[in-house]
Length: 336
Ligand code: NAP
Image 1 (cartoon, helix red, strand yellow):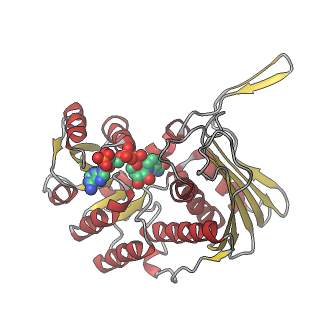
Image 2 (spheres, rainbow, N blue to C red):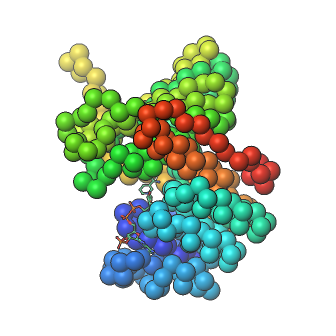
Image 3 (tube, rainbow, N blue to C red):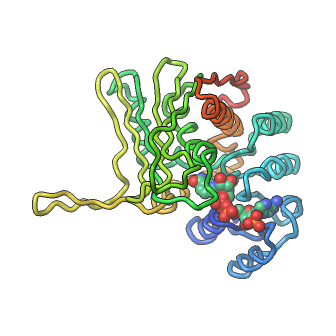
C-alpha cells in the first residue's frame, strides 16, 4: 500500500520532508503540494512529479490525498489542522501545533469530537536515538529520581529576522516538549533571564537566554538558548538524579585521539543533527496510517502543552518574574 501525501508549505522543512517521504521511506509518495509562493510550489512539484493545488484547503479536500503534512508558517497551522480533522485525514503538523493556546484548544476539542486521534506534532526529539537512550536511562531508575536537568540549545548563526521571542517559540519549544516527555511530568512555572549579551548578535536580540522550568515533581530544568555561538549546532542535555547522571553525547560518529588531544565534529545545523529523528517520526506516522492505528507520537495535547509553556516563558521574558503554567486537565482521550 502507498499512502498518498499532500504537503502544505514547500519551504525549508517542507522540501526536506518531501524528499524523505519520496526517497527515504517505503510506503509513501507525495502527490500534491501547495504553498503561498506558487512559483516555489511549482518548482518543487515539477521536481518530484506532484500536482500543485491552489490552497492548503484544496489540497486537504482533494480525493487523491490520503494524509496531510503541514509545513507552512506557524500562524497558518490551526486552519489546516482543523480542516484535516474535519475531512477525517491524518495530519502531521510541524511545530508549533498552533501559535496560541486557544487555537491549540480548538484543535484538541475538534479531534476529540471526531473520536479518533488524527494529529501528530513534529517534536522529533522524541524519535532521536540519543534522547530515547536518555529517557530509557531515566525510566530504568539507574540514576535514581531525576532532580535537575541542564540543557543547551546552541545555534551557530541565525538570520536577521530571528527575534528574542523566536528563541523561545521556535527553539526552546523543543526542550519544553522534551522535558515533559522525559520526566513524565508537567511544567508548572517558568522564569527567563537575559545574561550578558553575545557581541555576535544584533543589539536588540537577547542572546543568550537562560530559562528555568519548574516541574510539578519539584525538579528544576535549565535551558540555555544561544543563537549566534558560531562553533556549531550543539544540543546538550544532562539529567542529575539521586544516584548518578545521564547525558546526551554528541551525535558525531567519530572521535580522533592523537598528539595528546581528542577531536570530534559538531553538526552544522538542525538538519544534520536530527536527520535520523525526522526519518523516524515520519516512518512512525506513515506506519500508523497503513495499519489504521492512531499516532503514538506527540499529540495535539502535547502541542497545546508546549504552546502554554512558551506563552508563559514569553510573559516571563517581558516581566522578569516567575510565571505559572496553568494547563487544563488532560482529557483521558490522550492517555495512551
Ligand atoms: P519556510 O522555509 O519559511 O517555509 C514555509 C513555507 O510556507 C513558505 O514557502 C511560505 O511561503 C509558506 N506559506 C506561508 N503561508 C502559507 C499558506 N497559507 N499556505 C501555504 N503555504 C504557506 O519555513 P520552514 O523553516 O520550512 O518552517 C515551516 C514550519 O516548520 C514552521 O512552523 C517551523 O517552526 C517548522 N520547523 C520545524 C523544525 C523542526 O525541527 N521540527 C525545523 C524547521 C522548521 P512564503 O515564503 O511566501 O510566506
